[in-house]
Structure formats: structure tokens, C-alpha cells
Length: 627
Image (cartoon, rainbow, N blue to C red; front, side):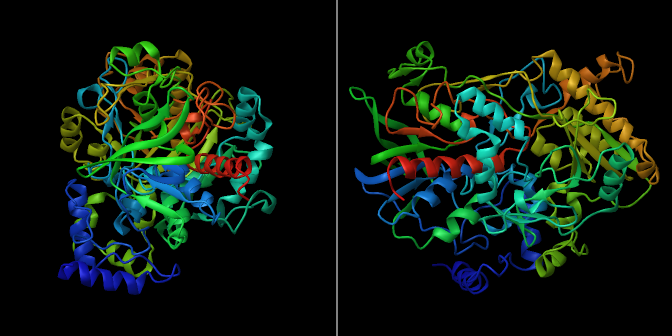
């Protein structure tokens, strides 16, 4: 063990020996250097390079042909939950296979979440196929789809927003599958079970929340004046302050986030850290799954083939293989294993075990990112400030876990509205407004993460905005457009082809335009005019249309639609899997992640995905009589 690694280990051990202590991040100077490297996409995530957390599960390399009761593929939001819950039963042994590496403490600083997307070591670096209908202002007209290749998966990559969704989402799942156990009334059991709810500043119905679960949901430790203005502006328009994870979703609220004491609280930290001493839970990291092994005669999944380093390894499952690799990797692995569209698989030379429309029904949430408003206040924060040795932000965060570094990439508050209603009020809102006191897509660093083309980035930089600004991203919650995912080849390392078909349905354009106009209404309220809010003329290729016309905004939306990283539906429950998430026609194989959603939730899906993990793990225990 090198000197740095030994010193780091001793310090980390001392500081992280109890959950009550904060993660060790290094000194202000070393953290500033690491953040600078992260912004450039060159930070090396190894124990010898940066501080690490000793509470990570131990990594093993399984013996060839070794057997486990359950094999879980993917240590993300659902997989971490399922592996943890199944290993609660001491007579059962569980192998968890993860393609990525450790979750390092620097990843858990909320503010720099966007910069994690710049690093290929922890990001799958997916992007959509080029299009002439959307993402026109992004490099090669391709949308970036960052996905976490790390312990905790996307719960380490996301912006930590904790939203359950609308109760009608789950009732829709129940109707679609014909199984009442997916209804909101039943799913509330799991939505409560997972949470350790510590939100402050709003009226909360204690019957709908729990303070003893593993996943922390809390209020931000820091609020800006502009976020207060956003709350007041919504109230001016008649939208009430409301717990959007309560009885009804409609209204405005500060972010409820998966944050504990100013640090990201991922599925890895919530579910796997407490399980690290279990003798029946085994983890293999940096292990790329090539395919699931299925007996063609009995149509039974019996194992997994994966690559770790230079080793090709086969492990066997005595009971089940649970696929929780996410809405991109789960359908990819199924197709590589012979489950998918027969013609597509046959064309690639993959032996077909079951013909199924795997990869279809691809859904995602997108938002328009080009609304920027200047103000006469110096409240805006840019990522470059962190690199200034005279800026106290890093020192404040290290010593107090407070300040702007505790806010997920600057997004502080949101509201749920119905743009089809003049008063914007409805129990079934169709747009989420995401507020942030940042430069958004014109920020020099965030624009790279978002994939803004050099042409537009250079124009944004040339504008040299010196005033403080704020932005709101209107996000469509119930898109009608559907995409698909196809394999590039039968090579497990080849990235799949992604066709989101954003804005294919005209209603999606209509809803997003309504969201844009709602943002403009908010900007004219007394709350925002107190700061002299004025729309900034973002450079767009839409001047041939009259400003503020539907045609103008459609052009703008097609230029800069940004994914909110909510891909789902590609292994649709009730079609590829039954109501218990078992793959139809194949025994011993279950899928449990966002890919099984029949319809995308009206929310950021991390919490519903964890709830899926809670429900499916309980289902497995009952079916195998483990409890």
C-alpha cells in the first residue's frame, strides 16, 4: 500500500468509523484540485489518488462456476435495494454484480453532480442517434444520456431530487398489469418503508411518511434569495406551498432531496453500507455482464457470464437471476441473452430463445433549457468560483457541510402545474418547473456536460454574462412520444442504439410551450420583478419566426431539449415481464428497475425505482418462503 493510500486509509477509517461522522474529503486545497480535475473529466477514481470511504462493500472475484441462491445484476437504485433486502435472510446467499467501481466521497458533494458526467470512468457515456428533429443545438445533434457506472448507479449521478410521483401513476400501473398490488394504496407501503423523512419548513401529514427507513430525504442546508422569490412567485399565481410527496402533488416547494447532513445519500450508502458485514452478501465490482445463461430446453435462467479484468467468469443461480441494470442495460442484456425482437436478434447472429418486443416503449422526461433571466442582484453562483483559492465555499462545506455546495447543481425548488388550466391548478399536473439560480446551459462547465455544441458554447461564452441570472426548466411529465433501443452488434461491449423519438407526438410540443409561457408569467410577478428579472436573449436559430409564437418556441425546444435522465419502460411490465416482474416464458429470471414501468411516473423516478426494489424483494421472499 502506497504512502498516500495508507495515510488516506487511516484518516478515512478514523473519520468514517461511525455513520454520525462526515465523509473525509481532504484539505481545502486538495479538494479544490480534485474538483478542478473533475471539471476537466480527468479525475482518477482510485484509492491511491483521492480519499475513499472504508464503508464500501468488499470486492471479490467469484470462482468460476460458483453458486449463489440469487444473483443480482446492477448495484443501482433497485439492485442495491434488492441485494440488501434478500441478504437480510441469513440462510440465503446473494451475489451482486456491478459494472462500475466504488462510490467516492467527492461524488457525494451535491453541487458538483453535473461534473460527474464528464468522467468516462464512472459514466457509460451513452448518447442518442443523430436526429434532425431534436437536440439540434447539441454536438452532432445527439443527446447525451449520462448513466452511472458506479456503486449506487444513477443514485450517485442524479441531482438527488426525491419525488414519489402522482398517486394516479401507480393506479395506472395496477390497471395496466391487472394487479392491484401496484396501486398507490399498496405502493405507499414501500414508498414509506424506504424513507427516512427529515424535510422541514412545510406542513406534513405524518401518516404518509416514515422517519425510520434507510433512504434519507431532507431539506437543503442552504437557500438563496432567488429561490425564495420562486416560491413567492408561484404563490402569487395561486399555487400553494405543498408537500409534493404528500396527499396531492400540485403546488410549490423547496427541493426534497436524498441528502443527509449536506452529503448525497445514494442507494449504495442507504442499503449496502449497513449490510457490509453480512457473511451472505457478496459483491464483484468492475464486472461487465455479457449475458444471462438460459437452459433452452427448460427455459430456465441458471447463471450469468461476465468479464472482470482479463477473466471470463460464469456464476450459477440456484434460485433466481434478478436483472436491475437500468432502462438501457437491462434490455441490452436481455437481447444479448436471446430475449428480444426475433428478426433483430437473428440479423445480428444472436440465437433467439424468446421473441419479445424488448427495447420498445422507451420513455423519458425532457425539459427546455433555454430560459434565462438576468437580475440586478449578485446571488448567482457559477462553478468557476470553486477554483478560486480566495472563495470560502469549499472551506465552508468541509467544516460545516453548509453553503452552496450542499445544493444539487444549483436546483433549489420546483412546482407542479397544469398548463391546460388558466389557473395552473390540477390534481394531475402535466409540467414540473425546476428552478435554479445558475447560468444553466450557458455555464462554461454545465454546457459541456449537457452536450451543447461548440458553435453555441462559443457564442454563449462570447456574450460574457456578468449579471446574476436564474433559470427554470419546464419538464413534461407525461410524454406521449415513445422511442426504442436496438443493439449495435452482438458484442456486449458495443453501446446500444438509442432512438428516443423526442417530440414525436404533437401534444408534447404543446405541453412544453405551455410550460415556457408559465415560466414567463412567473418572471413578471412582483416577487421576481423585485430583482428586476428580465429575459436574456439566448442565441437561437429561430429568428425566422415571430418571437413568442408557437413556431418560435417549437424551434427553441427542438434546439435545446435536455434529458432529465429518466429513461424507462423498455422491459414493460405486463408485456416482457408479468406483474411480479418475472420475464414471461423464462423461469428464474426477473427484471426490477425503471425498465419495467408500463408508463413513466410523473416524477424524478429514483424513489419509485427504490420502491420497486422494495416490493420485488418482498415478493421474492414470499415466493421462496424466505421470511
